[in-house]
Image 1 (cartoon, rainbow, N blue to C red):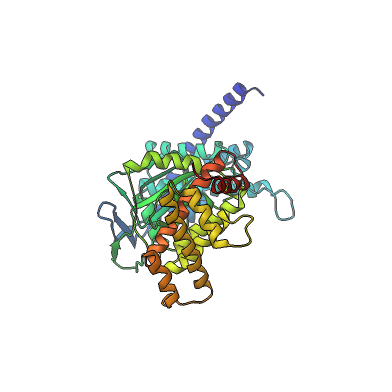
Image 2 (cartoon, helix red, strand yellow):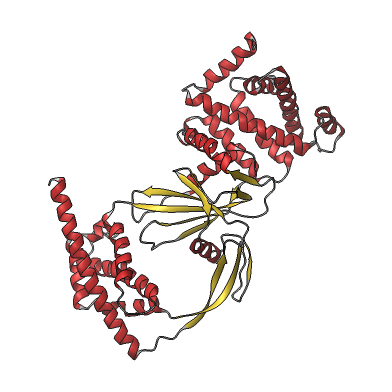
Length: 460
């Protein structure tokens, strides 16, 4: 079949589907309206979240609500017997909607399920889902053309589009955008969390808030989030979304200093939002300076993201280890624990092929790699050699209050937190510089060889 013929057939199919759906909805609403006149729908009291993003505050407020969606669900078995609904379901079976929405049509033994089970599945999944969303949007059982059209457009796109686009949102902790409302880098956006997203996150306790079932409120720890879109090949099978968020978080941490974290991952379909998923990722106490971005950071952040996203670090085990340890350090409270992660990350970068004089060779190679002049290279060398020695003392159980430990720090005129922060910055710059050379298709061996050649031949 030619493309034009296929498109014409699909267009006609969509027209027929829309008319069948409209007839089924109108018939269902008439039935529900008659039924509601005989059976009283009793409202119930629930607590809803009242969000004020600008004030960064939230409250729980009592709200009377009619359980309209529940009423639909209660009567769905009878609704499926209506003539107009039967016509819709027959159309969906004939056009294999069960295949288009990836229904499992075989049982555990591989036997194809009977047609009646397929009809029931489509009735509950397509018509039932549409009806429940419709009555909640309208607030009753009257027909509203605009509401119908809005929901139908979503449903049509969901059914006739292969796969599914998922919106992934991660609230950012210890973070602030200064002077701007949004940063759009194409692949991801940094923006304010929407009211609906706040409500879902609060309802799942994914922001670290506690809300008993009585009027209560609080102040948000954050109003900012990362948003990215993930194209999933399947409508019904989910995938692990954590790596997508971790890639962005790693980018931000490498771009500049600041103790940035995320508290949860919220995901929902871009269209036909019949699923909201929330997974918590901590959100306890955070140690370290606040991470801030301004409009002056946008272009350089975009350039770094374009460089970092194109590189699969798993193809470079040494870099993968280094970045993983760099990220581990953000989970540590004590500077001595951070230092252990930093030096392990440095070893992965700089000690390839080295078995002796480890601290000396690490410090020398890094100083050569990062230093712009003799004075800066000497400073880097002294700090990293001392940091390596400090790490050895820590892992072998020497107290940081010991005389030899204090002597090591006094020699640098630094305290332990200051040493840890300086080493963190050298590690950040090292990883970024390795990324630059790997972009030029140089291997780890070639980079190390260049560093050693530079040491031997001098810097002239």
